[in-house]
Length: 331
Ligand code: PBG
Image (tube, rainbow, N blue to C red; front, side, top):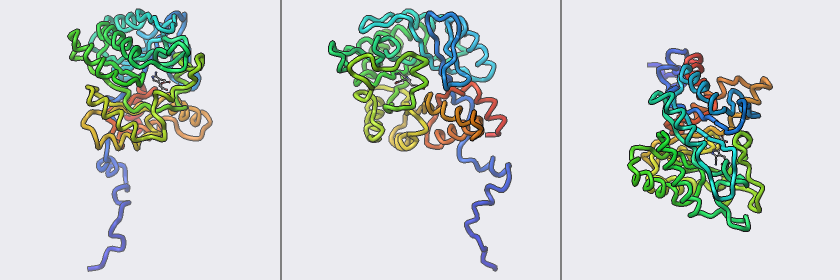
């Protein structure tokens, strides 16, 4: 018998669309997507965000229209960022956020799944994710956790299915879990921003939420967000959050940290969320505007890399396009 010339022929499996479809290692589904929504108090009209094409900051009235359209496009899971009008150093008024959740829940009932980003960066005068000491040099861990736990309780009472703490304080998951349980909300999930790196790629988001730090002596978030140089810190933080009761662990940014997603996937049985953040999203949008790549195909390729690495769900500003793009491109 003649010896096959290329015994390890890999191209057989790439030969046509049918065999490529059959042999795919992973699948993308629109069902695994979460769409972020911004809702701001005190603006008359929705406003666009530089770099975030297809995304706007809504008013409490217009967010209902946005959600209605999103449901038609096939996305029903949302991560909500309320942006209040009034800011303070330590006395926070959560009534606008409460109204946002009550209004959406009343209008859409169980047709929507709602997660709440839980952070103080849109509430503080200085834009940090918590309460600062009087000198403005340090973020105070436990007072911040106390405020966040109370805020979380208000949000679940208002109808949030899931609390997503993005502040990066120590001990917040345990504190929030016990607060929710104490008040009978043991059915509400916690999606922890577990591996959240200190990143350049949150730029466009900070414009959307007016949450750039810099008014205080403490100029950046490096004392609470994870260093890009320390992947092990991300794993340790995520496993710690799991121990404290986090139901879902998030890695953020996503595409730059697929090594962390893959490593975490092997070390936990918790589902993983990958947040393709504003700067990562905007990078694709700007390249597409310059004609340097195909927008849809590029987003699909990134999403694929996240699922391949081990993410169960994807938070993307283009989640509302997932159904159409996955169908069109036969992903
Ligand atoms: C709030 C928060 C941030 C993001 C999500 N929640 C900004 C930050 O930590 O500075 C970033 C999301 C994005 O860039 O898309 N703490």
